[in-house]
Length: 241
Image 1 (tube, helix red, strand yellow):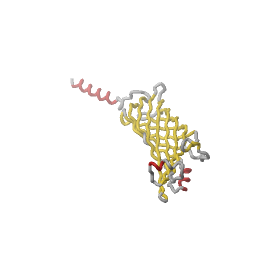
Image 2 (cartoon, one colour):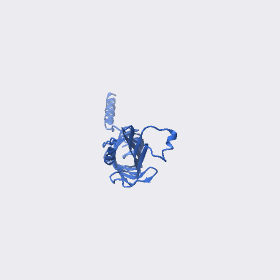
Image 3 (spheres, helix red, strand yellow):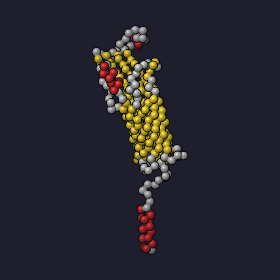
Image 4 (cartoon, helix red, strand yellow):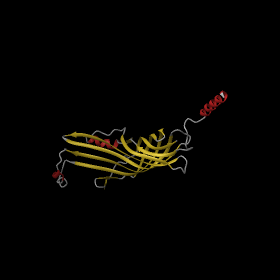
C-alpha cells in the first residue's frame, strides 16, 4: 500500500512539472478591446513661433504637448496575426501675454483619427508587438486673440461696422492623414492590457482657411501638421498573445 501511495505522489509531481505555467487558448493572437489613450504630439512650430515673437507672445514648446483620445482593435481571425481597429486623438497648447493692457493669446491645436490596420509579430509571445498604419483625417488650428478684456452684450453688435481693438483670428487646415505606427501591448491580466506606441503623422492637403471658411493665401509650405506622436493607455477586453 505504501508503494502505491509513493508511486501516486511521484506521478502527480512529475505530471505537474511538465504542465505549462500559463495555458495558451490560441496559437495566434486573439481577442480585442479598447480604451482611453493619453499621448503626446510634437508638431513643428518654428514658423508659428517666428510670428508670435513679433507680437510679443511666447513661442510654443518644440517638445510638443499633451493629447487625449481613444483607440481599439479586434483580431479578425481570417488572417492570422492581423487586426483592425481605430484611434482618435486631439490636444492643444496656449501661450499668453499682456501688452499695454491688451490681452494676447495664441492657441495651437492638432487632432486626427481613422482606421488602423496592424500585424502582430508572430515570434513574440506573452505580449504583442504590432506594426501597422493609420488612415484617416485630421485638423490643425491656430487661434489668435487680442482684446482689452472689456466685453458687454450690446457693444458686441456694434463692433462689426466700426473699428475695434477686440480682434480674433482662426486659421484652419483640414487634411487627410497617413501614419506608420508601432504599438506594444502588455497584458497584466487576461482582460486588461497596457499599451505604449508611437507613430509619425503624414498630412496631405495643405490648404488653409480663415474665419468663415475663406481661403488663406501664401501660407508657408513648411507650416503643416506633420508630427511625431506617442500613445499610451489601458485597454479593456479579452487578449491572448
